[in-house]
Image (cartoon, rainbow, N blue to C red; front, side, top):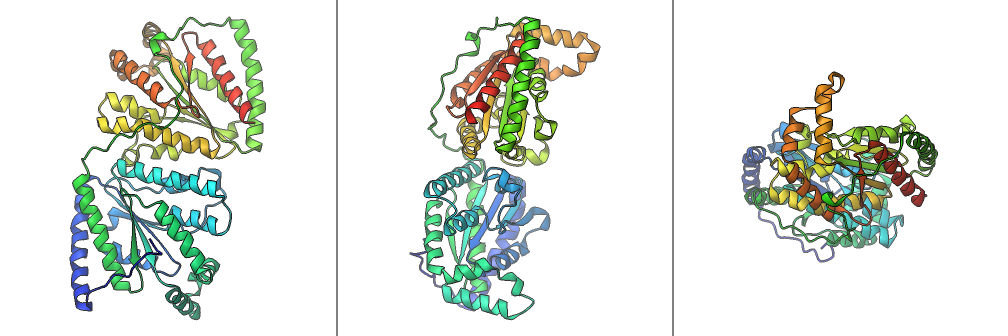
Length: 489
């Protein structure tokens, strides 16, 4: 890419001026189509220090209504707080809403290539980050995002000249940092690392475009032309179905829900004694995972009235309230619905050493969204693989990920629904939607069986909590969580 780059030929000044006007007019007209079609557009600018990324972004956005775009700079490294989240975290929170532009002054390239040049990551860690980036960019484009990636390229002499000019003026001196100087002094070394990164992350769904940034106007013409081409193609492809990828994750065999015995129970006295014992163990382990900075994610799914809330309560009863959060997941808010469906879960991940418990999860995509028609068939069929990829990011980061399906039979659910409806202080727990969902029991059972079959991976298997006797299910959940933490420690 960079090593083989051949500088393009550009037309005369008047022709550049004419074509700039054409491209600016195109972009102006496209912005309303983007809003109407709800197309989210991510435009990533990378490049050499002093190549003019910031100025180029400023010139591109002149023709866009300020209500339709945001600009973010991730040039500075991750903060101490951001370092306690997965590598992708601070980038995923920046993705735009549907119908909006997001212009990004550097993205994940800078963090990875800088770490390579400083010798801070191994070849294995580099490959892992590249895999994460390629997977995530593919997920974004599969879910309707237009991802455009520009690298602003200048030669070593041109970069040195620009840096010197900036340093000569006390009002612009601040724009040159130590890294810019180091990059110019080690230009060839940086060129090799940048070239490898561009080749490793150049994919047909999110290709790299090299911008010759020597001249301000021709750089703008290149950027606008490529941006308009990308938008035109994305608008034409916006409703096209995306291929379903074959699963590549080793799976754990799961039983069908109807084959799970539900006659397990525990006497009250034994329950009290064992609950106290297990909660004390979990409390002790909570201090250990905090000290060792191990994040824990507990994901709950299950039938309505299966006992998820009571189960969660017995876990949190053993935890220091400063070290955990419970995330009740309801229907997405408008700003959440306007983004990739996993975005709201990226935003709710725990810091290292903390515990996050999800009361319902990202699996809504292949259950309620599937059955209620809130997404297309292509969307939920793709989601199995996307969820496995998401969970691999969490476990690769070092998180302990425990997934519980809380199982009861239809008769038990009916009995609990009836009790709730006939008990004034419990009536808030039962809604018309619960009764409507109950009518689709067989459809939900089929969806859950497929979910368990396709997403119970070796690194993130499902655990069934038999909850006709809620006491039994609570003890089993504690035992599974304690075992997982002990194994990690």
